[in-house]
Structure formats: structure tokens, C-alpha cells
Image 1 (cartoon, rainbow over the protein chains, first blue to last red):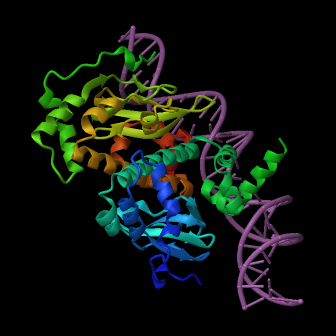
Image 2: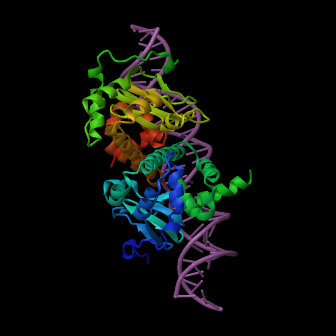
Image 3: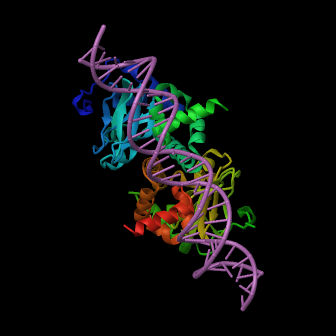
Length: 212
Length: 212
DNA sequence: CGTTTCTGTTATCATTTATCAACAGATTTT
DNA sequence: AAAATCTGTTGATAAATGATAACAGAAACG
């Protein structure tokens, strides 16, 4: 049985400097105006360390997505489940990505997605309220958030275009080219679902690709 | 032959008040802090009226998308073209929508998409430079831009999830429910392409749906 | 007006992909 | 160590969708 995230204690890091380094680096990679010392402290205090183990839920369908999570270490997947119980992967998430259902987090509506940990995962999480109270006045943070939204919109449109335009074989080839890191972290049936095909079809596609 | 947009003259509206009303209303619908009189003037002067006729290109594959366009009246489509010359519709755009390839506009890279007018169309356009120079200091504009990106990212993810999760029949049913206005503006083969299926398949799906 | 283009339907056949089932090696759990 | 689960493959068959072609009414065009 998977345990629910709400049963786990939140706690602030005992060593505030160590855990947040990758987040600070990440933010600064997205902005022209570097963070001041004060702002770095604000960020470190606003984000809270949370660890979840493999198979544990970060978000379950029907819940409001309370946290946005920056993944420090680990791997997660975001997916919907249809009438027949089949899972459809809409996102694969690893280090230096964000785990959040933006629709639910922003609109405070129940999510149609599940997010769970594929590997033991360490995240830095923040609620919408804490974000608004502590971070929305920091220019670099806003700049990053803007660019993230922009990049996300662009990436999702590309993926959509690939799905309506290309064959399963070409979609996999493109995916293997641009996201080879995922191939090593997730098994084939997860990749297949991400591409919108069955695991059997992907297995055959790969086999054919070898003989070319 | 389709004429290219760059051959057409740009001109500022002779009656600055009349043409920009829908844009001002649109902006204010997205923001909590209303525009000041001065800001309204800045907006009216920054956006330039452009009319294009049916079938004319607003953007061609290979070009950098120089303009972001707010559609005042008319209908457009955004699409890619594959090896075989088949068009794949990635977006259908009508009044109160934006016509722009965000990736190209933001990154200044050549676009992989075409955008053309399906009906005679009136737009208010702005270059990235003019946006940065004149509008980026207006809080309401930034608030709107943020929310637009947010909404766009959410909507595209929904469409992507539908594409990897649902049958063509269900995708069309959902589309007909949530976007009935498009059914009246665009012919079936355009809708089919938007859904990622052929026009023949859509024709059969619709016929089956009647007998249920 | 006649002609052309556009739109939508239907039929036939081909291709792609899904479904179901069985299996084996690897990994995890107990 | 044994049992259970996970992962990937393969075969047989079914279902969904695409490709091609032909056709007819509607709309646009010269």
C-alpha cells in the first residue's frame, strides 16, 4: 500500500546551507539579476525539505495540489488513470525539475493527475501562500517563474505537435535523442505510456530500429 | 498564390479609440489593478492595426515570428507541414485570442509553424522590442502576460493528456463540448487535423455518433 | 453564367496499433 | 531461499485508423 504524503512530517532542514544549493544555482541560471544574500536567505527559509520514498504519492487524483516541489534528487512521474485503470504518463520528472500540477496549484481545484515517486526522492517544497507571501516580491524569482512558464508552454506545444504529426517510431526516435537521460531512469513501459503507445508496440519499434 | 505579410503596409489606426476597445477590455479582464488613462494611451499607441485577408500568411515556416497579434475580428490557424506535405493543425485562433509562435517570438529562432488567415482578419500587433520598450513597465500587462502563459501551459497539457489518453471518438466529443464555436468557424477537415486524425475518420466518427 | 475549388461522404484495402496471452530472466519482497 | 512482482519479448488476432479513389452538393471565382 502506498502511504499518503499528508501523513509525513514536514521539517525545515537542519543544515540550511547544504540542501538548497542546487535550488539557488537553478534560480540564478534563469535570471540576469543575481540574488542578494538576503534574498538567498528568504528562499532558503521559504522552501522546506521533504523526502518521499519510491511508490509514495506526492499528489493523488482528487486532491488539491498544495505544494510545488523542486526535485533535488530522485525521479517522479505524473499521470492520469482512465476508466479501465490504465495509467497515462503526462510527465517524467528528475533532478532540477519541478513537480506540481500547475492547474490545481494555481486554481486550487482538485487535480486529475497523480504524481508519485519512481525512486526515493528529495524535494524542496513550497505552498502557494508561502510563495505569494515570501517570494513574489523577489525580482529574480519572478523572472524565473516567467521563463519557466514560457519554456513549459513551448515544450508542451512541441510534444503536442509531435503527437499529432509523427508516427510512434519517429516520436520514440526524437524522444531517445532529446531525453536519453529518461531512458536510463524509467523502464520501457513507462516510456511507452509517455509516448502514447503500449509497451508491446514500443518493444517492437525498438526491435525494428535495430535492424536498420 | 498567397501573398506574404511583409509586403503589406503597417499603419496606425486613424481612430485610436475605436479599434483598441476589445484589447483594453481583454487586458482588464485579466488583471486586478485596472489600467490608468495614461497606460491605456500607451497600449493604444504600442499596438498597431493590421488587416489580412483570407488565406494570407501571418507567419511562414522558416521566418522569425516578429509580431504577437491580438485578434480583434476573424479566424486563423497555426500548423506544421510534414515531409509528405500534410498539414497538422496545432492551433485554431479566433477573436480575443493571440496569434504568435511563442518559441520563435521569444527566442528569435525560425519558426517551424505557419499561421494564416482562415477568414479576413483584423489584428492588433506588437513587436517584441516594442513590447519590452513600452509595455513591460505596466503592471497590469505583466499580470496579464503571466496569466496567459499559465493558462496556455495548462490548456496545452490538457490537450496533450487527451491525445495520449483518449480515443479519437472521445477527443472529438470533448472538443465539440468545450469548443463548439470552432465547429461553426472551421470545416471538418481542419477540425480533424486539430484532433490528430484524418477527415475520413472524423466523418465516420460523427456518423457513428448519430446512431447512438 | 459556367467553371473551378472546396467540402463532406462512402467504399475498399492497407497499415498501424491495441489486446490478449504466454513466457523467461531480473529484481524485490517476505 | 522461496515466492512474488516487475520487466521485456514474442505470437496470434482484433480493432482503429490511414490511404486512395470516386462522387456529389455547396461555395467561390472568373
